[in-house]
Image 1 (cartoon, rainbow, N blue to C red):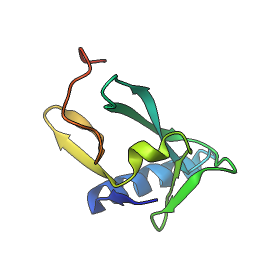
Image 2 (cartoon, one colour):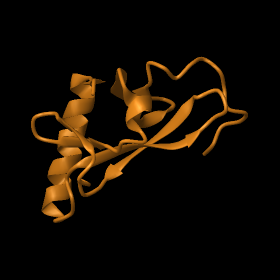
Image 3 (tube, rainbow, N blue to C red):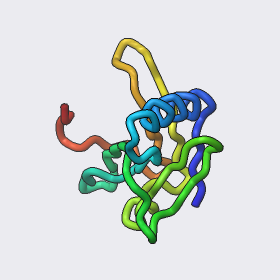
Image 4 (spheres, rainbow, N blue to C red):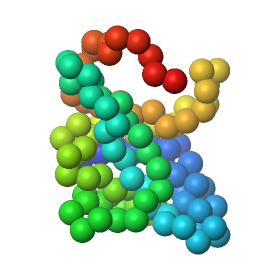
Length: 108
């Protein structure tokens, strides 16, 4: 599958994975679709997890992204970026097929 991870996001993922390794937890990062709106706009979550046999694995050279088969269609051609603007730091996933419609309210 095809996912673009910006250099900035790759750096941040590697940093997170390195600190995670010293904590002896899984250092691969799972990206999954947490919830879906009626119009197909998905909310993504990321977190450390152990690989599953049927995961898509994306090797970023130092950190592995895992995408389960159910989430893969939503992440096809997506871009993972990292931002630290005033709205808060964190990874942003821009899905190519995310559409432009909202979901009825923001989830915090």
